[in-house]
Length: 291
Image (cartoon, rainbow, N blue to C red; front, side, top):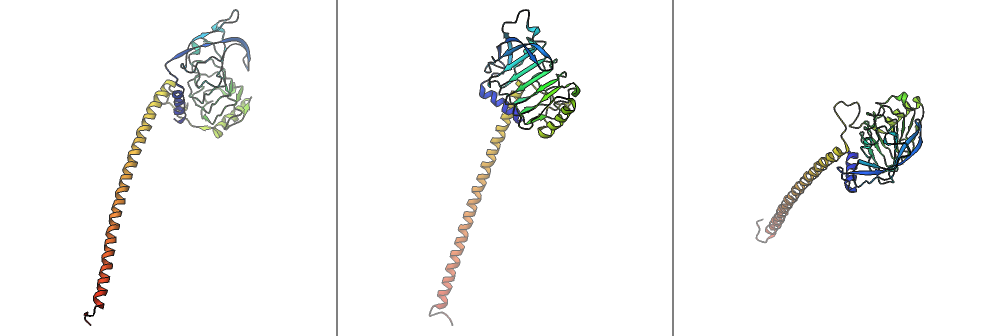
């Protein structure tokens, strides 16, 4: 809950309207990727983060003989201003197998960010502020062979992150230069070891565990709605605590007043006893006192 609240608060501070959408500009090119080799790629740094998270149009000039269906890779460089993974790319690029995201302020992967790419084989999210990864992330992308999360700030990794994948199918997994782990592996035995190490060093038994049959991950929009409800609940609880504190302070004032009254009574009693003692002494020492 903490990371979802922080994420949504960030969106609010950034003035992001979730319901809005935007156009991106692609620099189309041929590139070479690990495992899958040469691909036709859309490279973009044009992400208007103040407009929304849903891509509604893609601009750019294709190389000769190419079109949107030929795009296999999408590389997004956020220039340290992008706090989310843009959605709806699959409407324009239905055959994407590789997503590459770098230099962003993304802190959390809630798990549904890449569901629109069931053929995804390569995922890179690096040189960013990523701290938390949900167990749901790979549930809709069973063909993953290459996972690259290097150079982030990862502290929490969902216990079942790799459960939906065929571990023997994975060829490279990178988690180097992170807060809880610094390791990269390239064979099945080492990958299994890394998965166990993640569970030990970056434990996160998140509420979106893939072992759960009753919990489903909501979309980012739902997170914002949940945030508002949570913030209202927190505010109500704080108000109740303030009322309780005020009630306790009033009781304390009452007790202090009662103590003051008792102190005054004791002082009066002491004064009377002192007077009686002095009066008795005067009477017993008076010349007319009986002997």
